[in-house]
Amino acid sequence: MNFSGKYQVQTQENYEAFMKAVGMPDDIIQKGKDIKGVSEIVQNGKHFKFIITAGSKVIQNEFTLGEECEMEFMTGEKIKAVVQQEGDNKLVTTFKGIKSVTEFNGDTVTSVSLHSQLGGPSTWGWVGRWVVGGQGRHEEQ
Figure 1 (cartoon, helix red, strand yellow):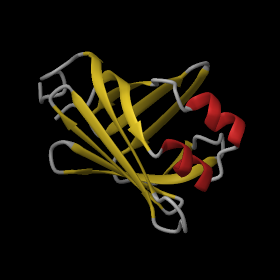
Figure 2: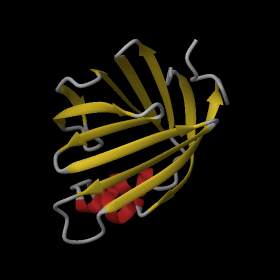
Figure 3: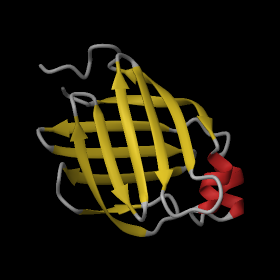
């Protein structure tokens, strides 16, 4: 499966509580809570480039499946992460006690992030739709 394409967040759950729990400053949380971010994925074999645009903030991360890499976290902090492919349609990212599972089904992208060490709300989820590419775009070519 090729994951390349562009998608936009449609809905999200528990954003504010999760971001606060992982150390995001309140002013940034308030600015970001209603933004429908756009993410672009460019895949070349096992190498990926993710470009996330939320308002005026742009984060670009690159990684190779199964290899530790350095990524920019939502707070701007540089973190170590590993991304694995699970089955045909899931990318699983682990970093800083967080496990993020992103699943691609047709033109829908669903992501759930779980934090294993938080005392409070420990999940954040969102659903996005492909805005470029669409259903079938990310199938094996």
